[in-house]
Amino acid sequence: MSNMMIKVFYDGKCGMCSREIRHYMKISPRETFIWRDIANEPQHLKEINVSQSYALKRLHVIDQDGKIQVGVDAFIAIWSKIPRWRLLAFLCAMPGIKFTLSVLYNKFADWKFARSTHCQMAVQKL
Image (cartoon, rainbow, N blue to C red; front, side):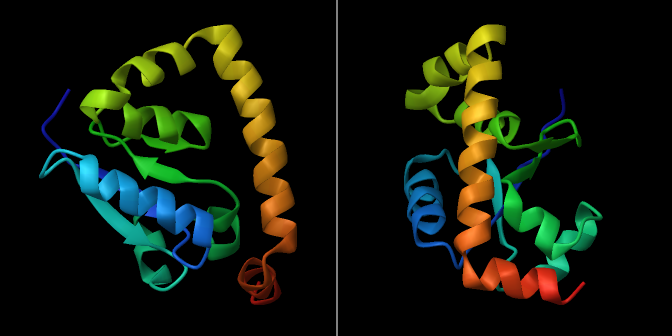
C-alpha cells in the first residue's frame, strides 16, 4: 500500500451527495482525500478516463493503490480511512452484505440519475 491520497469523484450538483461529501470532508483525517466535484469541474474525469455521464451515475474513487473503485467499493474505500467509519467499512466489505448493498445502491443510483436534470444534460452531450 502506498501513501497516495484517495481521490474522490463526486456529483457536486446533487444535494444529497454534496451533503454527504461535506460531512466526510469535516471528519476525515487531513491529507487523506482529494475531492473532485465532477459536476462542476468535469476536466478531472481525465484522471479516470470516463465520461461525465458515466461518472455521475456512481461514486468513483482512485484508492491509495491507484485502483479505480466504483459504487459500494468507493464508499468502502472512503469509510476505511475515516476512524469512526472503519467498522462500517469492514462490515460492508463482507461478501453477502457487500452484494446486497451493491444491488440496492445500483438501483438507487439509477433512480437518482434518471431524475436528475444535470445528469440527463450530461447524457445529451454524448
